[in-house]
Image (cartoon, rainbow, N blue to C red; front, side, top):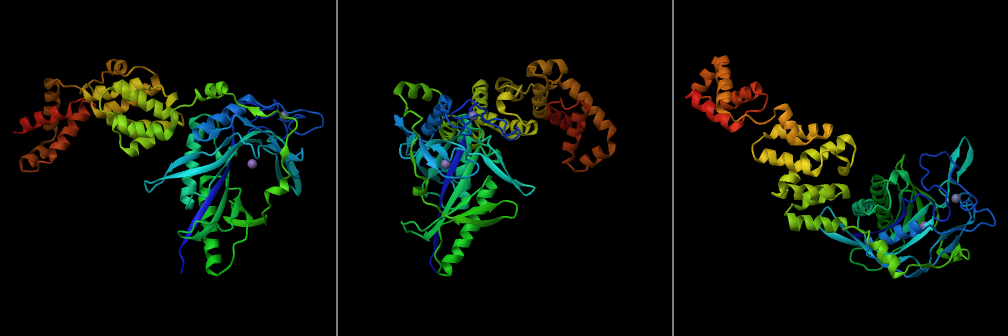
Length: 477
Ligand code: ZN
Ligand code: MN
């Protein structure tokens, strides 16, 4: 039996987070608005109107192109992609065809195996979205709100080798889009949409077999499930000696099945031609460098730098650069602390991340600033407070917005290292527990921990644990 290799390419549509649509002044994001409320003669294709290109769309597209290492074209054009569908009132979609905004490019995607797969893109282009139709009460309803919403389309090469790799690509793409601030990239809100092209070939072959296209996979989970199903189906077909037909399939998320929508149309069906209403899009080198001056260090570069400059483990660095605001917080805290960055990383990963999750906020919104976090860790390092007081301080600082040292003073949280005070508490504990004292003297040495716990309880967690232990041992002699 031949071994098969899975070949997957993803076509993604990314909604840019501009305020207005690509060719008119209508509000772009209608997620919370009633149908047909953000529309005008331009985006609904009434006669005699002219589209005007939104500058912000171009700037966000250029940022993404640069982040994808694509070659930004000094001149690109808008074309009409002609087809009839009820959600497309103009009868054509304004898109870019043979002269796109950018060509080439790639995204390096770390895979769970530890390897990094370079996923290429052939081109990156701008286009407008179409409307939305739905069936309700036996009627076909149309919402034009999405008409003219700005999109970037990127199609990957046949570079992905499993459903899991496809999911990883989307996870990293989403991370990148949010990082550079050009899209909310929320798949559930259709900010990031994905179609998957799937085929099989004998392992080691370089040719491509006919592929199927899976539409409507609108979550990372759906991408994984739909591709897994399709790979299983194609494998069975191959093993039965059947040819794969170039179908378009629709993923039904509720029932978890793929349905055949149609045999695939070819590009010639769209009769592309230049849109005569729009000027060539010229990106001067001045404009380009002005846009690119806003391009931050990218997630994987920052991760590599955290490993290199701060000696953080790969695992920590990956989590702490998962999102830009967290990575900036981490860096600021490491700098404010000045000691071993791993100390800060531990506090972040164990406690601060949980806090962010519980509160549903970004690191940049914390009242517990990076400087305050560093201060708390230093207070613990210097034995001024013990570890558990430090952890409790995180919440107190976050809730009050007051400086850690101020709270320590006001609430008397400083660790008690005063031997006399501790000795009094120890004596009390021993006096109150004659049975345990007898057991300890009879050889049950592990009871020392129990005594320390008793003293801590009496002193409300502020006793120096080491000093307590030493004093107890002396007193029990
Ligand atoms: Zn409009
Ligand atoms: Mn498209």
